[in-house]
Amino acid sequence: MMTLHMINWLAVVAAAVATFVIGALWYSPALFAKQWQVAHGYSADKLQAMKKTMPQAFMGSFVCYLFIAAALAALMVWTGRVGLVDGLKLAFLCWAGFAATLGLTANLYSDTSRMVFVIDAAYQLVFFLVMGAILGVWR
Image 1 (cartoon, helix red, strand yellow):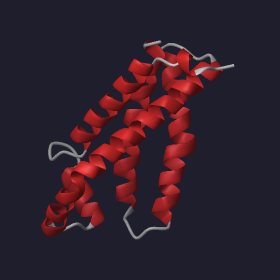
Image 2 (cartoon, rainbow, N blue to C red):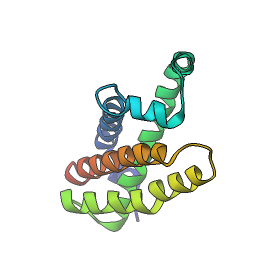
Image 3 (tube, rainbow, N blue to C red):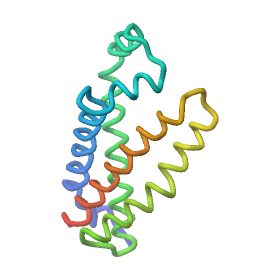
Image 4 (cartoon, rainbow, N blue to C red):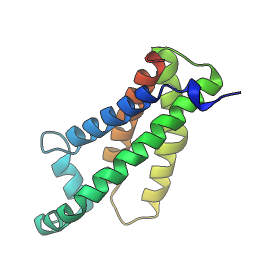
């Protein structure tokens, strides 16, 4: 039986912070900002208008990352998986079984291009693996 004290909450916060940092880099001009903008069909004016809601989006994203990291940590405790390799395997399974499939399903019913899905799903794969590594090693 798992109790909340079995989760390393500091590792959960570290995994969420790492995910937030990866996202800042992933969607920066140095990496995929331009491709993401084009894939969505966003104009410069649209991006400028979106800046008004960025603080709320950043806060909401961080809270979501905390929940994802906590859920992944709970799964690791429940399954008894520890270490880098187990963390990576479980993270990949969660990404492939939930994040990627839900993202693709949503994309199939939206009017956005598949490239939006590819950029977002690749980010999610990277952050799930980083989360899995952090949570698997930092027990």
